[in-house]
Image (cartoon, rainbow, N blue to C red; front, side, top):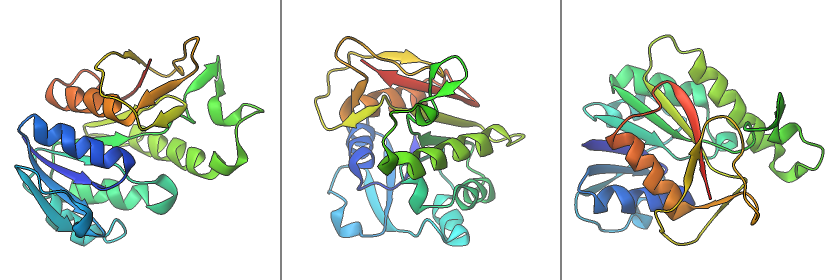
Length: 202
């Protein structure tokens, strides 16, 4: 597939770029600083600004899918969504956050009493992004939330999928960037969560 990846040099974005390239997809790697985009087969680096909707739409046009991997508090979800729609791209996949996942019936992780204040703005912005996607009448979107700990690690291919509830085990709630990338690209190739949020964890 021809895939546009917004935020291709970030922690999650760089792993997604590697995973997409390793599976033979043709990737347009969009970043502010394209010197950080690695030279991989099938990857074309393009400079882009997440706040420039018209400019983004031009870059995104002609792709089969868009994956956005950008911090919610450092972007505008309305601009991103409108750019995807203006470009006419059929699928939009979003690297989500864990904050809006439920830890008890009706209780989101970011509303739990022990949720770290330092992450609250980003987590609530992620929840707002998900709400905007749910309100879209026709956009074919998917929002993949990681587990609570979203960290560098190994590509094991051994993980669980869930829906709206935070996944956890005896070791806690975590997923590596590498295994998250597998789950996201699997969803790209074989859609199972159209117009829905799902989650991945150990």
